Image (cartoon, rainbow, N blue to C red; front, side):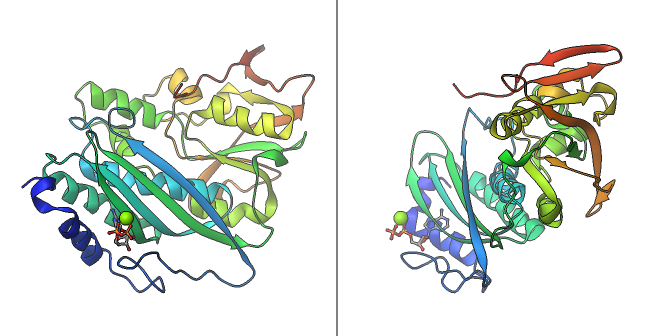
Length: 307
Ligand code: ADP
Ligand code: MG
């Protein structure tokens, strides 16, 4: 069956039935959702869109990965502020001739992400378009005043990264080459956001960002916002097996956290944390200096840019 034959009302009924939950005061089915947040908390709010041919290829990426990732990337953003992700809306435009199998697979991924990350679908919007287009908007919360910004890095702070780097870019490369069996492919298709680490460390770190565009680009965002520079040591970078130096330094869609702080433990919430460098004062403009043995080179942010 195709989406056109299913129709908008049945499509929304399908989603409503599948994602019925008691976590919100009012969920799918009314004009808007009503949710509660704990007293003395602030709302953390973000959105991330997924466009066919830009973020995924219909022939290459399984539909459940598209659904899983659309939720995961927002969970990652909320976590990078130190927030607890809680509720989201799902808005999508789908081609009328799309097979409903694709939608079912996509919703499987959304559903699995809900279970893995403890978040709840509370509404959305549905429309038609020539290509698949999905927006997830996520609401989370954090104790008032406890947010961690990009702008808090101070000279002398350590720079830490969760997990390993390079796997997502390697996974995409392997997937394109038709080798879906490499472990990095799973990593690319079903990212593991580090929101639990972000929440656990929020009260003791000075800056945080999730790596969506690549280490060099996202680290540079922290430096610019904090008006500092940094040194990164090549031998300290936690390199995923088989990944290249370029994938480690610039590969996007990692959804690891870059954390700036002092004396952080080697493991948080079962996730390894690696010290990779330190914050230094900025001379004029912010710079990343990559130390490789006795060589020091300025590392340009070469991660993903849409335009
Ligand atoms: P309205 O015309 O008021 O925008 P809709 O018919 O678009 O209402 O939506 C009806 C209900 O279904 C709303 O509660 C909305 O949040 C929900 N909804 C619509 N599309 C989606 C979707 N893709 N995912 C989740 N909920 C949806
Ligand atoms: Mg609507």
